[in-house]
Length: 288
Image (cartoon, helix red, strand yellow):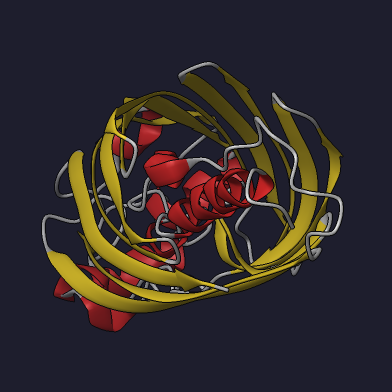
């Protein structure tokens, strides 16, 4: 690899590493962990790596996140999350920011300087909701981890990135389907520092909303909460602020905060204590 191509490759790989910070804060379709946090550093694909560059890329890191105990909770909890990934050409396993998952197996179906389109099978890293999380949840039962099938697309033009995804439960754990869209602007005051910010929204199916916000007759009898039926529709609006700093060619640190507001039937659920939700985290990773 010549002296000219080396900085270009490092730039591309470092951009991919920065994006890994966000994976820990995305925990699949747990809405308290905003999808838009993937924006901590979207991969830069403006220049192709040298012809003899290795198709293998690896990332190892960890993050600590403060998040709502459950969607609609007034309390928060801390989660420590490892972020490990391996990429071979178009294929990936482990953490992937475009798939918005810490546990994913998938491939890019199409990539160029502006587009990244892919498909993945993902699995929940964090338990979405447990009765033990809060006294308000007693009698409602746990929301189980599950496997999801996902299609996602990311489009970048200059300093603007748009991301859309559709995620559906394929393991029969009543998690339904969610569709997300985020629009983010990127600013680099210095080459090592990337700042991103922007809005996003999530649509959820009736199955998803029933699982997280509905109360059936059996749950009502056990918990004392009134029965409640939740339909499909707009579930969340959000705005995220993120920063990532490359402290060395292979080391990166990042921070993120997301402000989210529940909408639709989620706001009137007897499970919901607070419709505004805040998630923030700190991350570090190493690329090799």
